[in-house]
Length: 553
Image (cartoon, rainbow, N blue to C red; front, top):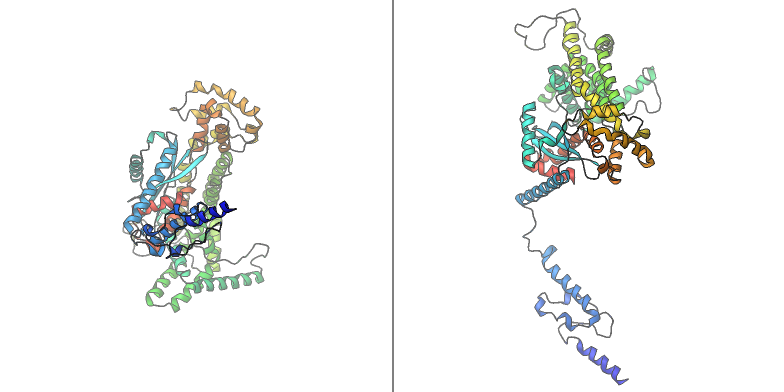
């Protein structure tokens, strides 16, 4: 028994005998640690080895905790807050630089396409966004934002120069580029009268929606008018009909939103007029009342009503096409059929849609008491008279200079985007679709598809197509796939991309062919978040770096 007491005595004597600090007895399995009791200077503390072996880990953690608290949080030296704008910009620039480098390394030597679109930011500077599209090593289609560039103008030469500068800076080779999607100038940008229409619509929306009080007035007045129309039988009731609404604001980054704005303006026209008349009488200052009177005079003209109904009818066709092309589950054959249907509808409207459009406009003018000019009278230009201008009738102006011209411009734009050659190319690509056990497979069309890419294929090499289709049909796993994107991933997983490299190359070319620029429009939506009215003086490089981290992260 005596040796046990001696061991106990030895353990007790192993503790540091310091009278200035309260340490627990070694009789406890774990001593009670109070960080506050330790000296701030590590040199004045007992060595960790002086403690009981069972308590050393706890003492070590307590020492570390004490050391961290000395220089952290409220006790920090206040010299590393990273609040300097220059330091913040350097961090964001480095992060953006490394992010783009990762994308370029992931791309490697693969073929790619680019998606391009432009829109102005909050500072009314024209910005061109570039998104790259490629197939990675796993067979997945990747879309990544690359850069946003300030461009002085949006003509073809300026955009081409901006793209070449971007490729040179990032080390991308134009020889690997196999397609580009560009949402170019639309009918709303090319025709002066239509551009004026959207300017007036934007001003009306801004004035009417400027205050919450005005929005409430619009909502109440529109609800009263709907109730009155239901009582008179002008509107029919039913599930989902006549829901409470307000005047929609168009989004500069999404042209499809303009259609919703025009539809809401036509449906709430009398309510908008009532609110504008109220502002013209009760406006806060004379400038506001004068501007409102100008808007009232402009939107209650036959010219405005005609342009409003014309563009609303055209956008009803093109908006459906745009939404169909941007659907991820839309197959190429149905998409191309939709393009042809849209072209036919526009052509049919040009040939026989004048009378029905004019009847709708006259009915609208009669309902809202808008003066209608006699079509046989001479057309009078608003404002100053044009020098040496040929005298024309109202019928010629509205039918030839507006109706036919705008429709022709829209049809030409569709024909430019979807030429006969491009449509044939897309339809040939549909032969690769594994849907319904490769029911669309056509060897002749695939050989014709390879003829579009003479640098990549020799027609003699495509004799492997016979073996390929037999292999695909014999595999139940591959024959149940629903799209070429799934087929590409599955070929990589089963290593068939090495067995049929030319077929996989055809799949890659089909997947990177750009059809719509929805991804770029999402970039512009992010741009309006990064560069807003509170940060409207953000520089181009700072905005590009911030946008890169915001979009890709």
